[in-house]
Amino acid sequence: MLKTIKSSNSWYLTLALMLVYLPIPLLAQSYYAENGTANFTSSVPLYEFTGTSEQLTGLINLTDHTVDFYLDLETLDSGIKKRDKDMRLTLETKKFPFAEFYGSLLDSVDLTNLNPQTIRTRGNFSIHGVTRGLDVEGEITVEQNALHLKANWEIRLDDFNIVPPSLLIVKVDQIQKISIDIRLDKQ
Amino acid sequence: MKSILCTFLLLLVVESTQAQMERKRSIENLPDPELFLSTSLVAAQTVSIVPKGEIQSAISHSFGSIRSGWGDLFGLDNNAAVHLGIDVGIAQNVSLGIGRTSVDDVFDLRFKWMPYRQNSSNSRPVSIGFYLNTALETLEERRFNYSFTERLSYHSSLLVARQFGRKITLQLSPSLSHFNTLLSQNNSPLQHTVFSTLFLGRLQLNERNSLSFETVPLLSDPEAIHHWGFSYEIETGGHVFQLFLQSGYLFTEQYLIKQTSDSFWDGDIRLGFAIHRVFQMKKNK
Image 1 (tube, rainbow over the protein chains, first blue to last red):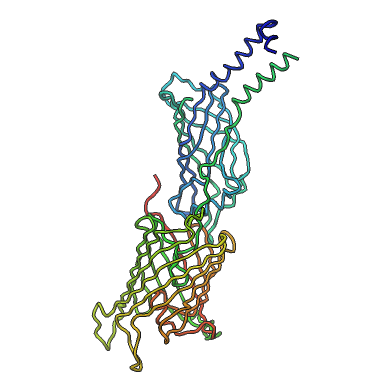
Image 2 (image 1 turned 120 degrees about the vertical axis):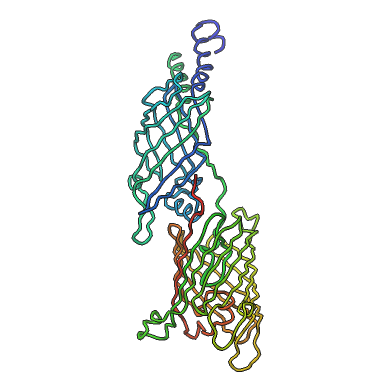
């Protein structure tokens, strides 16, 4: 095999080198973090509470325009342990531990522009074992060897087969607000 | 053939850079077991404690004896006792609380410390803690002019509990209670200091519902009657609801131990309920 490459076809060698080096420029255009902030905000009449996690993991690849984010839902902290337990039971985190979004960038990121840039993404959001298509608009700011991303969107709990807990006649609203804030470092 | 192989390899490389990241759990260990749903059952304290930074409000209510029948709607017309309480998690595994029972206008100040708690890895197989309360009877007494000290009573417990197989929890609480003042009806000698052991248990029916009981199997006071209480508990959204069948109707431990005069197994049973609600002291950032 080696003999064939050396003797017969020089473009084979070129291709082999490409295969070796191709991932490097691709990876060089990717940004990664695993300490982003994610907030899940729910409402009940006259009151709102937020489960927060500082362990959002994210990857933005500017070469193939993909975005990939996930969160271990058991890391959400609402400030009240009993409510956290209730949230874990509602989301069935033992069975479906992650909330995730995987999709594509619809707009290019201008790495020379240091002002906040509005970026649209399209992909699939999964939670509670249900995956649905979702368009999310976010704001990316280019920093030194990093991208700072902020985004928020809303989902309906019944779209994801999530039955919100109720207390007598007081029910948690179907609308769940999600926001993320993450600084991704260049890999 | 060669070109197919090259194309395949090229696609493989490109595909590998596009694939989703491997999902890794941030929390590998199981959460520590929740031995009881609430910090108290009918009246006895459990090894559960209000977490640091949270406030728990609780209202407990017991009615009259069901022996009264339809005339008093099985005791529901007779208000026996109401206890209002607030407990605060002031530090990791330390809580402080204050409460008031409507009978004899008794205020109680509570302290609980749970330094050793059962964990999921079983490196700590039991929970051990300490509980202390001081109660002040503020009811005006026309016959006697009690001093502040004479109105005080105390209760202390060592709390030892273990959960077996994530479904069954048992707790023993060797306790010492003391009343500075007791009233005697017939000049018989009274025991101001009483040793007792409370025995508590919980059967977890599912993630949100439990059956629990409490009793006082060991009691050094021969005059007191052993209290029994059973509780059906429902947990939802930061609340715990408890429905009781109980013999003793007082919600401060030393009063429940010393002054229970009804026997559950002779049919002196009353209905009761409690609602526990936790609040966050400090909002998330």
